[in-house]
Image (cartoon, rainbow, N blue to C red; front, side):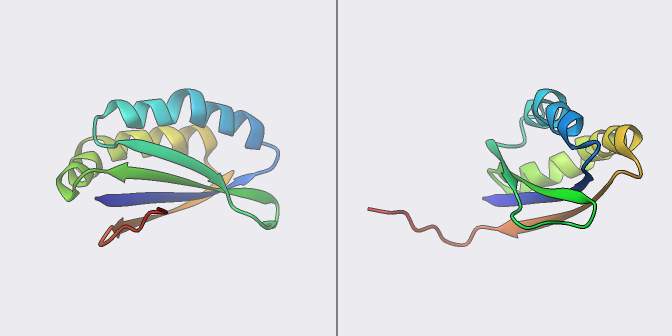
Length: 105
C-alpha cells in the first residue's frame, strides 16, 4: 500500500469555504478516479502564521494505482485547486510506502 499525504496551509479568511469545497468537490473527485481506497482529513495541531494547516491522507492499494493517479488525474485536479485558491495556500505532497502494519488486539 502507498500513503499519499497532501499537507496544506490555508489562509484563515478562506479556510471555511475552502474546507467545504475540499469535502464536497475536490476529495470526491479524487476518490472517483478509482485510485484510492480512502481519504482522511486531519487538522494539524498548532498555529500557523496567518493560516491553518490540514493533512489529507489518501490510501492507494498499490504503486501502480498511485502512478496512474499522478499521470492521469493529479495535474488537472491540482490546477483546479490552484486556480480557485492561488495565493491563499501552500501545499506539499509526500509519498510513503507501507512496509508493515501493527493493529491493537
